[in-house]
Length: 180
Image 1: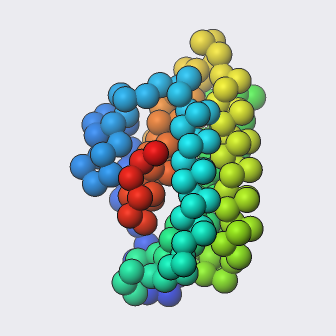
Image 2: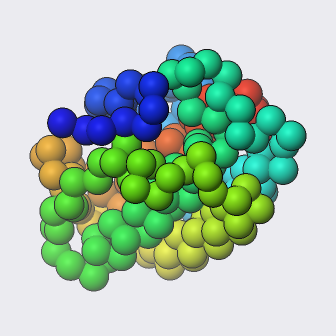
Image 3: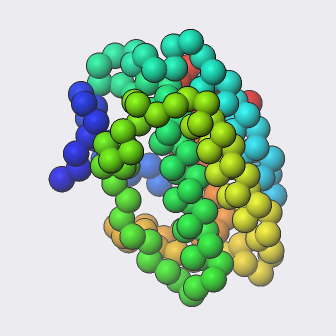
């Protein structure tokens, strides 16, 4: 069972449906961009996240059971790192299975609320740049390579990119920012 940060209910939803239809909450449409768009979109969202990290209210939770903008930024930073690892595995190995990642345990272990917003912004931008570079290296021959999440969900490199982008965009929506 996942341990969540103080007052936060763990998110146990299966979000893979966002690969098939638009997200009613954030407006993300999986068909509105392709693999070639990902490097630019990860750059643009990282710049927006850096603005979020500079907000005066960055440490304030809008409700006791909702992450602060800083906590969401920490999560997005870690998501970029995780997806870079998974993407590398997919490009280097045949059909890898990804280790489970407990985002709530990570939030506790890394003590998201106590992190420095400026440092988080820099690390988030660097992480977005790293993963954007990996997506930019994907070719027509490698875009369909597969990987499987520990729960059995299978992704191609292309669908992993869309799933990854939705996570970043959705959390911008969570902190009250429209998609760049």
